[in-house]
Image (cartoon, rainbow, N blue to C red):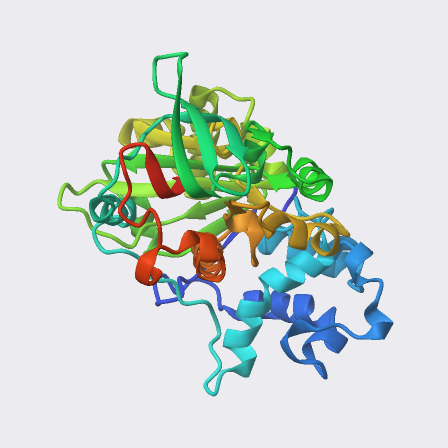
Length: 396
């Protein structure tokens, strides 16, 4: 992959897709990554590290046992060259599932298997919305949370008004990002350990640039599903495996993380689109004017500019896994916390759901353990909420 050219390679999708170059290079790179830590994957189960690996929490992926050439290959092809400053231990935990699938199952898998929601991912939040019978306040920002031994009171701003509204509950579950938690005033204040962890936690950036194309020019190269990897700004290009009735092809023309994503953040949408169109033209050996003409609609998501998220996902630096993990998910009285930053592996929707289930179980356990929460016959007080009092308020 030339540093100044349009160097690129493509890999088949897990369910087949484009044959492309053999999958062996990617398997080899994963072997390099796993081979860097034989004492972790080998004699000790489930990624537990031994005493002679006690330095591991302090290490980055860049520093741990790989040669210069191996580091370059892992960085370019596995999309880690913008993440070498991050915790090796956290990266190791993130790769645990991949290792399990390939080596520990009775019939090892050579790649991940991802599932999708038929008809669009928006069906998941829509299903939650339909099943919730209480009021949902959209685009309402929480300003303050007052909590004591008896109740929690949440103050928030409704859209287009500066006046504060409030709701009282037995418990509150804060399911925002860690950065968004810092915008909320707590009384009494959060513990010093929690405050320090929230302030110091490292977040990664991510940028997705989608193009809607009237012609699926990539199929002329025999590409169905799969991805291309380039050293140009786009870095990773994902090709669709769906056929829409309209005939339009939607291509993820660029998906970047960390340092690669930071390149796009200050650029205008027009400049971002221009860059990825130029990369597509170079990679597929087509005129840029053609790409501009057939791919004339776009959607760009920059998580770092999202006022509610303020970042894409947590990616820990050395020591943060050991120092902050417990404090991040620990409840503060009647205030509980959930989100991908409170569980492992980070960055996954499934992790956020797992964290929410853990918090819900903790709240349920607290209710059952507290005699003051129980009315006659063991019925939970507040289970049938009044207009001014709820058993639980969820902030997300």
